[in-house]
Image (cartoon, rainbow, N blue to C red; front, side, top):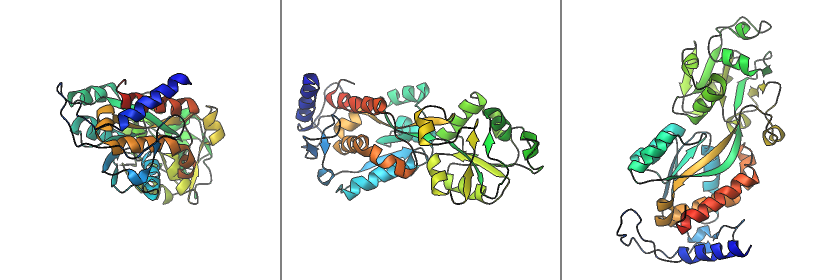
Amino acid sequence: MKKATIVMIAILALLMLPVFGAGSKEAKPQETTQFAWVEEQGVNGLPGVNPIKVSGNIITAGSSTVYPLSERMAERFKQEGYSGVITIDSIGSGAGFERFTVAGETDIANASRAIKAKEIEAAKLIGRSPIEFRVGTDALAVVVSNQNTFAKNVTKEELAKLFSTAKNWSDVNPAWPNEPIQRFIPGTDSGTFDYFSEEVFKNNPEPMLSAQNLQLSEDDNILVQGIKGSPYAVGFFGYAYYAENADSLSILSINSVQASKANVDNGTYPLARPLFIYSDAQIMRSKSQVAAFIDFYLSYVNEEVIGVGYFPANDEELEKGRQTWLKAMNGTY
């Protein structure tokens, strides 16, 4: 406890100092900022944030799955007084990482998959070192229209057929109709696509991309509309998009396990996956509004995540993120 108190005092002292550039050997002063948003009393070891005292814009982009969660956190940040602008582009995890690690255009990358080694290497070329923060858990939803009265459960083996070689529903299960399968799936820049490819097709997406009657989109709302329109359509996306459209969609159990908080928490739902945001220590230290927003995000995400349609990360993962934030801000990450 004594050690944690000393670390916190050091962080608070750091945040009250002027900010200096970290991109060269001879650091040059940047715009002097007294981090007025810092409050001594925070949540679970982080400095407190007073959004009324936070200014400056924040640019984020990436996962369509994480988008509604980041949007909710940004809305709350604004409601509590933040006066800047937070841009959140829903373009897919891969495209979001490209903007963050190659173009260097964003402060935060939203992702429904972990960053890849090649993306970390790309970031190094522009002087960035991506830092990972776990913010929640998704139960990837495999869904059909509520007009579909026959499909209730699939095994992972049937799932592979359903999204690749099967032409008709009866090719997957003889008890199902002899009707063509209409497939609606996320685009190849999507972390959801990558995750599904890894879990169901062992990192070989070709069978899925070669399937008949296939429509891809980075916009999950387009997928929702396509699936709603036919009893013979099927697709997959983040649980929040199912929850928002539960009146017109049905979710399939996987291996007879339903997508639920209990089954996500106990690890039995086969398609549960972590959700992340990424930033960089230099960005956080030079743009205090980014550090403030991430602090706020980690402090209050568990109050918002279920309402968005996802599930909380476990306490250990959230605490790891808080410790990472502290290390980034005191220069020890």
